[in-house]
Image (cartoon, rainbow, N blue to C red; front, side, top):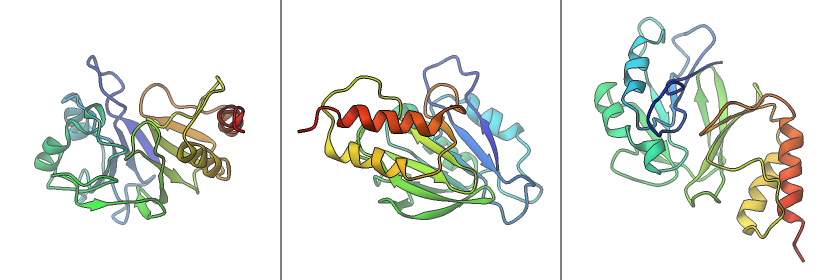
Length: 197
């Protein structure tokens, strides 16, 4: 699995827009955008990416939630790249399929699981690629250092993520996390449950 952040050098406020490809750009791979962001430079970067001979540059898009910094370019992506299939938790004009959690989708050359992760927003999802130990977390917060009162559904999300073999997190904002990821998630779960009765 190859992962490119199309908005890494953005000068405007946007999320990380990840292009996920197979290791060998094989015809069976599914070129996938995880979030599209709102910076038009992402489209330019996508046009320059090596996405495989005879393949659509973008075959599917997965939106982690509908906030403008994550989905702002969706209409342009649909127009520019031959209407890729769009998956999201919440139905909108440009979403083709809604997901609720538990679905398996091919992403690049791997199979990934959709995890509904309400907290930042009701429609937030994460994308977990078990074979690679990778989690695309969108804006789901996985580094909670301050105990507090948290909603039960958010605690359930952290409990579910603690059961996964997550070794790398690609967040919606900021740099990927490569070290101590499982401990970070376990510590976050501990902190959010500290004040429960």
